[in-house]
Length: 232
Ligand code: SF4
Image (spheres, rainbow, N blue to C red):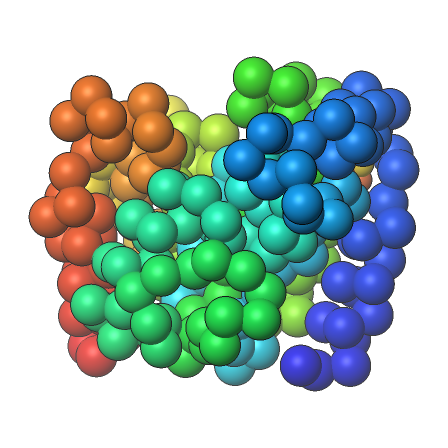
């Protein structure tokens, strides 16, 4: 891990800027879920993880209360993580198709995973203020990942977060704003050659996967497109 990214991650892990989220993440870590009662929950903000030379950046919404907030790694220990990792594995970005815990041997190649919000929010719903507050870390992370060419936004909130991020980094965002739809693609051009391709995807939350709104082939197609775009 590059030293600057490591420093940023250390800073993120000790952040307490959002009182409601601090209270929630720590309360969940204390009370736990029955099936995980033997776990020592992480209960802190989650840093991003993956390949510091990544050309693909994946932006999720926020850690799940008993997923990332328990295991200490984004998209790890819950069904969203399994869905995502299987799709990443099939596209050649992940070393294995599952994501169970921090010591499970998973590595990402050419991909980095992060989120719009780093602390598990009640009802999986951060407030606009919390999203804005946590956006500072996404912006700094993006600046420390200079090779990123393709961004996959998982869900509407992540998609909006990426548009804000793009503006901060001088990438051209059209007016009216690009609209979120699964499979939508937008080129955000930069004045300094740092343009990125933004791909929108439904989030692999249970709400989407159990209702059939998002199927495995739909998610896998997104990462095939990402792979194809990186080849081009
Ligand atoms: Fe800090 Fe982000 Fe967690 Fe808020 S959501 S406390 S800004 S890490």
